[in-house]
Image (cartoon, rainbow, N blue to C red):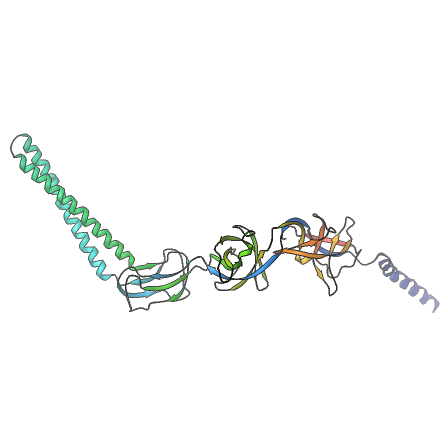
Length: 356
């Protein structure tokens, strides 16, 4: 029995050695992702409601009279110049044929008169024909030239009218509503379809007139659509205030990849004062607790330092910090901070400077 107990005790001692060493050395380093604190210009913001609108929203009308023979269905995606409707073109096709025949007849007549005038000139040089005959031929040639020019204009006008029987999209977009049906009679100005450009969008909002000294074309702003934040800029300020609401219109650019839909309600964050220079960190760096808000900074020894913070102005994904505890260039934990403890060793998994 004694011979069996000795190996068992030795084995248990060897098994306990790693556990004891682990307890002495502490847990392994925590994996975190970091981004630098930066120095930026920010200002307190106010949020105003806005609406997504299209840069192209038109009711496309007919330019010529005739029976409607085809209208693009709702939802059809078209490019600039694509047909959205057609009008009966049979009468205009016949008219064009008649115009072409008239042009060819006058071209043939003009060719004959030119040859005839050349012969008369030869005869006039030998006194075999009177000068009045040459003058008459010259006059006839000039009149036919003018008739031919007029006939060509009439033919070209018919071509224009014939092309107008194809109602075309003036810009790329989608057919939203059919305002005329097949079989109805169209007249110039009769609305056929409503076409909306769903790719080139912007946000319109009403801002307080009191912000006129702060807002300017090209100013960086943030759009909020539900939980989505989109950094963009003001395209234009309309510096004309409404006397009742004391507001003025602002227009903000909607990036192509934002995924907004025309008519969607959004919020636009506008600066309420002149921007000041502050130290900012990503919003994801904030660790929110019921009694305080703090962040974790990684020092030169790759240990986590817990810092209580007070937040200030925000701009998109970044938020300003009040005080001087954090400086530009500090490595701030943006992912993995929820489980960190002050003084804990960390291993930096990635630097997300470009993301923020």
